[in-house]
Image 1 (spheres, rainbow, N blue to C red):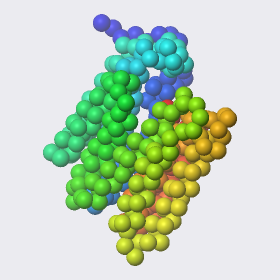
Image 2: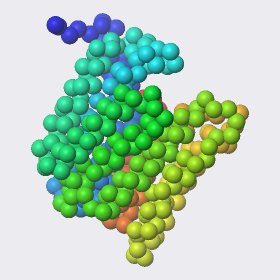
Image 3: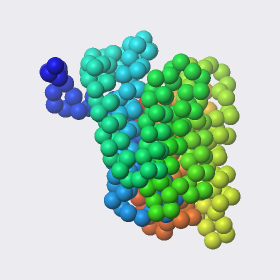
Image 4: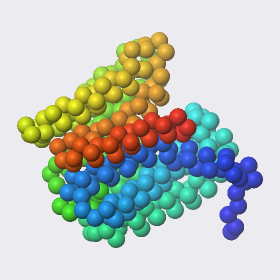
Length: 296
């Protein structure tokens, strides 16, 4: 069967539709996850890092495509502006692209080593499970956090030392941060006072960094922790300081960009401060990309 594209999807609108489906504005956070995990695995081959970033990006985009494919009926009722219900693209095309991106992502990763292959498969299973059931269960955010958890571990497994204890704990607190922001996002339709416990869960990266950074790196820790906390508070202002006109979308978008700052905090005691510029650039890229492509 020949796969044809609608004439309306030719050119710029077609590519924008693909970018929206892939939530590509969040790709800098995927790259920072890969870089931080690789550094926590003691770095090593830059070629492996490039393959990890390419594979992680493809798996992320594929997961986002399939997220819209699984949510087709929900979006028709509640989010008619999304590409499928707005008829910007056919559902079968979204399924096709999603599967292709996942397969290409696995191809980039499985050759790196047995551990990376195992974590990559775990990531794909987590992606598919989340996409399929996240609207049906209350602990969907936990499944979402599992995706970032396994992304961290597969990146660390590509490093010279593999998955170290610090890499494992950093993956756990990153997952906790994702759980917190995801449960905040689920309170969009709630009236009155919002639950505060997700905010405390999101503080776990700061607590871990406080324990693992010794006196020699205490100054770096305080600097990175202050920046992260200040940004989280700044993002949350749309929820807790604007009770009448809450804008949960802006808060969630800001918290998503903050993933890069969580990654920077995770490696605060490791790389030379000059490498921090890479994370700063990724953070800036996430904010800039969000101006053109919705993050959620």
